[in-house]
Length: 196
Ligand SMILES: NC(=O)c1ccc[n+]([C@@H]2O[C@H](COP(=O)([O-])OP(=O)(O)OC[C@H]3O[C@@H](n4cnc5c(N)ncnc54)[C@H](OP(=O)(O)O)[C@@H]3O)[C@@H](O)[C@H]2O)c1
Image 1 (spheres, rainbow, N blue to C red):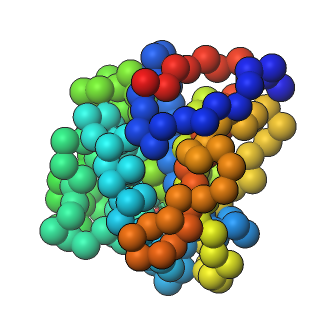
Image 2: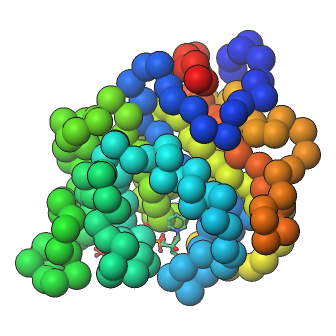
């Protein structure tokens, strides 16, 4: 565990060292998905996600890619790397705009050599987060103050992760649609970063 005190982080920030991060939004109970989508609408978190990931490669599972409406993929200004074990999927129309690989480890290496690869963002979903956490050193988790149910869970972070800060540090932001949320920052071991 690190002795670094938890910070009241700004909603938007950058890191001062190369990172491989995971970013997701979850309910209090760790739900991240339902029926192939997300069981909430939180425009502020979509803006946060865009701000954090734009200019950097994003790595995702095939099911998360397919959860984006066609007109929103690939996510612009980001190399979109999609993992699948299906041979031939890369030649299908669904794969248009994605860099397709059949292993997560290869995807993470490819990402580090892509534009903006000093920050790599793993963007889901549940299967991919569970496998990626051993390769990542940062996790940016939006917690939504909701107990809605779903079918996909966030991975539990192991003991090597420590809480580094939140926006707000206490309590919640309130979305313009009334949903309460806070953005939390976790890092592994002694990973250092500086919020700007
Ligand atoms: N709340 C959030 O922040 C957030 C973020 C992202 C996603 N989600 C939600 O999460 C759900 C999707 O998550 P999910 O767990 O069902 O699926 P997922 O992790 O997005 O994708 C799983 C698929 O990725 C491929 N895959 C996984 N591991 C692989 C590996 N090691 N090598 C090669 N391919 C690999 C496989 O594709 P093939 O089957 O093609 O082989 C697998 O079926 C949706 O509901 C989505 O909306 C939520």
